[in-house]
Image 1 (spheres, rainbow, N blue to C red):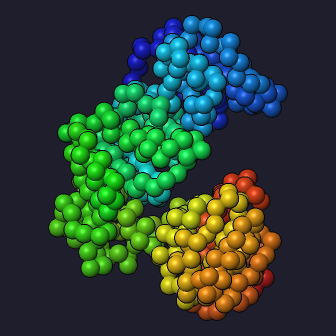
Image 2 (image 1 turned 60 degrees about the vertical axis):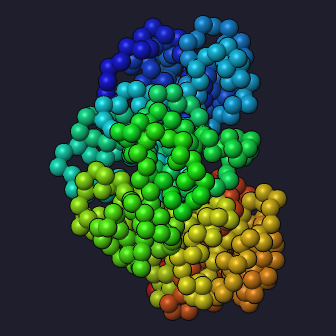
Length: 456
């Protein structure tokens, strides 16, 4: 990593821990800063704070005392999950202190190029595809995944050298806290309404995503989903060189035409060869192909890599087959749009959907057209009654209400037949029954394995 002197002997407050906060605190200490960490969790229940204290880092836990800012801090590095409505954050901004996220630190110390990926849906799959593609033809260094995908960017940046590349998934929360951050290549997969509880308005959410390109110039590339009018309009306000991708029309970038994927007239592969189903994964693949071709990866390597890509855990992930029934785990589908995209990848008449979860007060009328023609649906969680009404509207004849994901697997299998697909794509958050979507997905996969053992 670059040995910068920017933070030597500067007092810096790291607000909030988790992986990114711990990484930021360690990096800042390495760079000679006088670091104070503040985390809401009590010290005796906070192993991260205990570890940092053992390294000589000052730790304040059990709340966010506003009087901390009476000290002469020169900067705040904020955990992305802490909202800007937090009293301490607001006070810092009033005092004129920079409030950054650790991805900005990662950029400042990174010796290697950064490829930044954001968007409402498809970020993780696209990021993973890009990482695999950039490693497929590689002779030196490696593409390293970082950021919102689960590997703190500031940690990965420290471990990288000039021969590597950082393939960084970036959330809107992270992008609100950048200053000089500038990727060599940026990707915006799509923009839909999301996280309004954090951002307040759709306009603020879109602006946070658009921050990804704010420091880019004509020597950097911005890959945009050209099927979205909003992104086409936004593209008029960037200095970056635009590379479009589209599933709807031929564009001077990556595109889908007559069942095939292309990049600037060069045939890449058949869409049917992709290892993951769905039009949304065609879009993800096109974005990844654009990055790979800009970086000089061969079409043959791209084709082989994407043929063998079976998905990211909990994102239309192929789990296995039992007596001719295929099982897919799409637990990450925590909203209606994500489930609509998942359903588009399957033949409805042989598809059984497992759905349900946290009730956020919305109905499911907009899901009805996508449910039409399903062989069956198994519903669970707080929203099962609302989803039942949507299923009735869609004309589904086989509707089963059950307790949870685990029981839903057995219920679906019992009325399934050979060549059917059983898909978990809940259209809801998991928090009514499970701590997160990952655990919900793990429960689905465990239930499949138990069923497989019993049905031997």
